[in-house]
Length: 113
Length: 114
Image 1 (cartoon, each protein chain N blue to C red):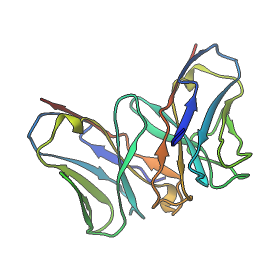
Image 2 (cartoon, each protein chain N blue to C red):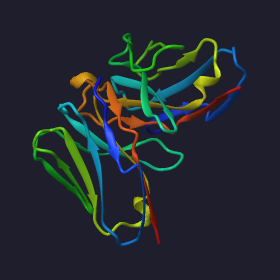
Image 3 (spheres, rainbow over the protein chains, first blue to last red):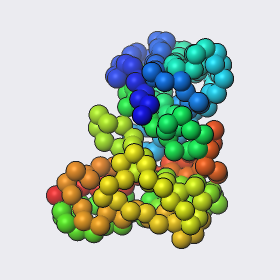
């Protein structure tokens, strides 16, 4: 069974700082999604990446998919308190293509004003 | 209603009792999912349904059952609750059963089994 490792587990920074969080696996990802979950709510999709080496940008968020498709990173520029939340990566279970996903344990980000 | 609704919002349940968590979506999505989220363990898939009339087992299906009689509803039943089923339960849906599709999550049900 594919396992997703996310790091760091916790991150506390000041407003305006940059940060990077990581999602790694020993197996190749068929595809990867990043979600953000705010306290008391369900996760919300940020991005889906499929192609090795792919880079996607969403305002101040930059997502990279490793060339070998075994790792991904999320970089936030000039973090704001509104970025606070749990960042989760997810990939299809057993490398499949259906929506049967496994999730990493997440990186809990706190951005202080 | 817009999106996914779950009921109840929270529940305290005695061990051994039967409990059904309700999930309804109004997006006409084909695929639906049930997850549990536990501190230190993340989100884990319990059961899923790729289309009405079909269901499948996820990562942690033991002690849970589901049904998908129609497109909109996907109830999760605990036949005889145990304390280890204390968790936050999320229902989700996607337009089709594809890893490329966005999964839309409900607000969750916080369940405590004593």
